Image (cartoon, rainbow, N blue to C red; front, side, top):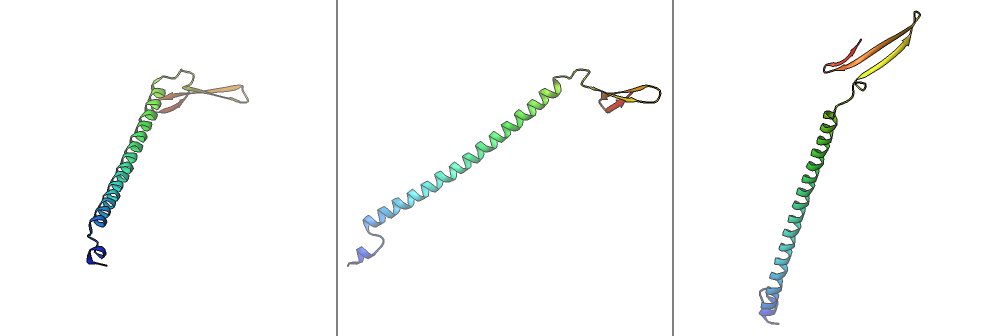
Length: 97
């Protein structure tokens, strides 16, 4: 065996090793890029879902409720008759009349 066959810098060995290393490096780059892109897509999808949920809550809040939904009736019987308490929803909470 000569020194050329045992040395790692022979023509066919060197070219194939270089191509293999370049291929491995390229695949690592592609994998890293794919992971970063998937994380970005997941972040955008999560943000879009959050904005959609907030918009839906805002629409429900601003759609307006009827006056009956803002009031609660509570009836109780006493010795003298029926006592009716009405509670109205105000910006500061509930008010009982």
